[in-house]
Image (cartoon, rainbow, N blue to C red; front, side, top):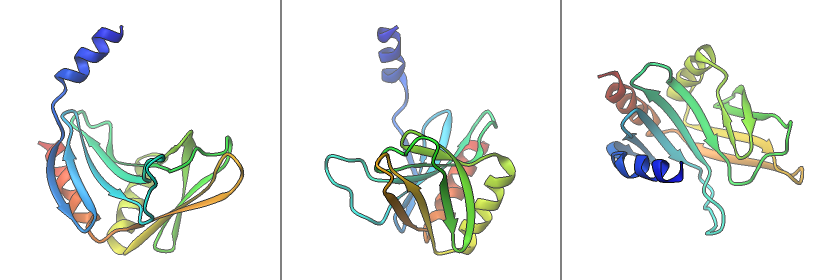
Length: 153
């Protein structure tokens, strides 16, 4: 099992950069394409940076799915709120990640991203401390369009 997993990773193509602008980048990862932006706060070497991603896939199952990986694990059962401009979106959360709830919410989020200059994700960590991750959105529309176009082919 471990050997087949390692072989699958080795056979997977390296991500191809599609576009990069204002802190956002779009990647073609083979079966899926992503627009990715990092949080404004610098990350420490012992914790990964918070990342916001919009995903598409060639099979059509993902068409603008939002995901966010936070710097610290979430408190079980806590809510995660994405606020784009002033528009709030309640996300589905588990571990260190959260996702959009489906196509209708994803379309609303993508529209809000195109109209806004910034977003924040608010959640509680395992200790119950509030954490807020902030993202600039200036390059997001370009990266999203590049990712969507690449996976639509």
